[in-house]
Length: 166
Length: 111
Image (cartoon, rainbow over all chains, first blue to last red; front, side, top):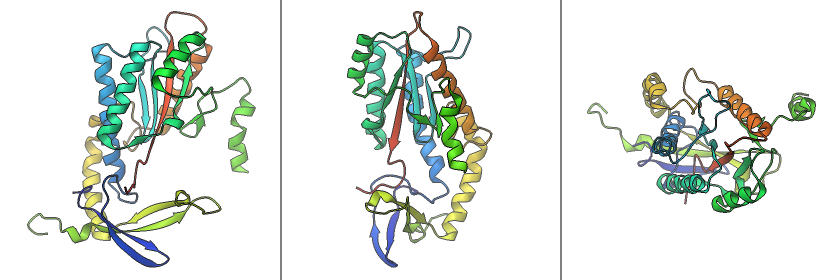
């Protein structure tokens, strides 16, 4: 009901244009949209967890007794973690394309960012990058508005916050 | 409405464009906001409040948006910690990789 029986009119230069019948997507401004969206993303999460249970994917853990973390989601911002193996990269790629086709949400390829742990050799990095079809970015990215990589100089890393305040 | 039917006329909405940034040149510089009518908002708010109570059971722990009792910082903190671990790991068998995706067109989209 919330997705299918919707029609829009657009206010353009104080005049109404419409109605427009949308094919997909949720509307911004509808109180239910965020909840519908996170329930959809739950599909992606389930795909990843299923692959994990089958043993096809392994998340990252910070030490031997820590939890394995394979994905972090905040609305449309996803962070996926896995081990460097060609089979896992292929599984991951399949999951992402499956989700993309099923949900109709475009996962923007140029915005893919990949980061390897320091013990991964150059040729191995190259092969994984080729499978996934992404570009390598080292630590320039932000996750949820915070830089995901904190360098030795905290002042340089967080100075942008100070700039925003003043 | 007495028979439990939702009249389709209530479901029509107006879209207003809110400018993003300083200059507006392309359609990307506008954010479409749907203006729903009050009755519609009331109904969806009722559904929302019901949904909120059970949401933490349906949504996995790794999703922290919109679920009451979970914070955006939980995710940001874990992400920073994991990336830091990967950055400092110089040897060992476990080789890990992080991939950041951006799901575009999350909301309004008309083809």
